[in-house]
Length: 244
Image (cartoon, rainbow, N blue to C red; front, side, top):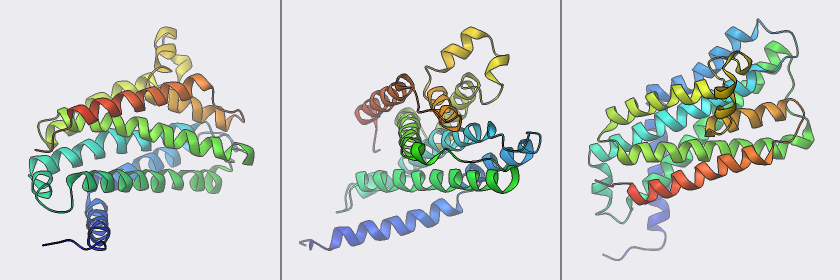
């Protein structure tokens, strides 16, 4: 039966609404939002008023949890359950589900990270980057999120099922978080590891955020590192992703 021009957009809207409800009910979504906020509030009280050193750290934690845990687990689970295969037989292609999921996951990361500056301002009296750096802050956030999401797509592509995607994501997250200085201050890390961490996607993301909160524009090298990971991981995911 022919499909009218308005059918597909309506289907996408309905798909988005359904997926948004499912994402809201996912326990991982709750933890991805609450864990960075919890860390910020608990450890923030040990900082001096106006000190925002913890905020870039928790922002990176939030994006990392969504990109390396929620994205691959959700998509690998959908493939495991045959949802992507069944969509291939409908006018609504599985690519639409992939796009909707990535946008919703990005929205979740924005929501979770948006709460952090509010908490910092209310509880710690710390400021956000100065107005002239706000465009840079948006660019860094999006670039870091795309890099982490691209790696999450690679995990989803190679994982056999949702459980293994979850495990791979967790195993990858912790060494990346350590090298990025999220688990231990960089000045307490061996110098070689601290320097190597800046060449990881999460490390470049954290360093760029800290530059912004220090009142400086992000370094082009760190922006290039995030862009390179986004491009290479995205290409790898596109070539290896399996719909069934």
